[in-house]
Every structure is written in C-alpha cells, then in structure tokens.
Image (cartoon, rainbow over all chains, first blue to last red; front, side):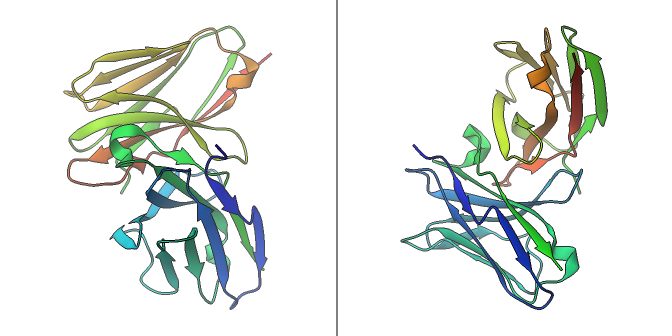
Length: 115
Length: 111
C-alpha cells in the first residue's frame, strides 16, 4: 500500500505560468481533500472531492484555482497564472469514507515556489 | 476563521518529561483529531476522540475532551527526541464535511 502519493514534491514556476499538482489517493479511498500550508502556519482547507464530484470548494480562491478528481486517474489541483503569494506547501489527504469520522491519510505535499 | 486553536504555540522540554498541548474550538463537533507533522513532511493521524468520549489512550499518548469547555488536551508521556514535531488538532464543525486545523504547537524535545 503506497499511501497517498503527491507529485511533484517540489515545483518551481515563474509568475504567470500554470502549476499542476497531482494526488493519487490510497487504494480504496474515494474521498480527497486539498489543503494549503504557509510556513509556520496551520493547514487551510481548499477543496473536498469525491470521484467526479466537487463536494465542498469553500476554501478555493474564486479565480485561477480549480480542482478535479476524475473517474480514472489522480486528483489534480490546478493554479493558473501563478503569483508569488501562491508559494506554499500543498497537501492532499484521502479517506475511505468521510474523513471527519475516521481521519485522513496525508501525502508528503508539493512545495510550490513562484519566482 | 480557525475552528481549533492550539496552546502553547511552542513548547520546549527535556527528554523524559511529559508534554501537554491544548486545543480550543468554537462550535459543536462530532469528533476531534490530533495529527503530528515532522518538518517538511505531511501530517500523520495520531488519535481521534468522539464527542461522547472524555478520554482516550494510545501508547504514550493521552487525549482528553471537555465538550462543555470546548477544549481538548494531548499529553505525551516520557517524551523522546523523536517526538520533536508540530502537533495539530482538527475538528469538524457540525454539518461540515471537512476537518479544520488549528495553527499547531511546535514541540521540541531536548536531549
């Protein structure tokens, strides 16, 4: 069981470019959550997805950010036209059922640096 | 706004001592969870305590929950250098389907 796999581990983008972050949940997990963490801070919720559905995107900025979890393949967090303020660690977590009742399994994160 | 707030923000103790971290939250919850994060890594789930439970143990970890005070504590007994990490509490607000994390307590165990 490979756990939650995120790639890339580190991503450097120039301002205005697109960043695409991938998350493969644990085998058997159909619930995926994305969080953002700034240095020395806690995790901020971004979006909760189930296969082919966005359940809660209340933490997603209205512009430039989107997420998907297709029937086949990993979940993707996409940031268009990145700005310096997007620099952060982005963590994906998964759970077999609603994670609020059972706990999340986290990936190691993608560290995005915008230069 | 944060649902959970940890206290203290940072804690430094000697190896072998006990470490206590506190978490306060604002709204009714179904359960409260504690996670550990080593520097530069993802979070690891430590323990979950349901709203109808008052205390739970797992190895050297002891968690208490006081729903009347909307607070929880995490006690690590006989600390080790490997316990050095940040510790986060996470709660679900009733009706929400996501966990909300606090700012964390940075624990340093000095050898």
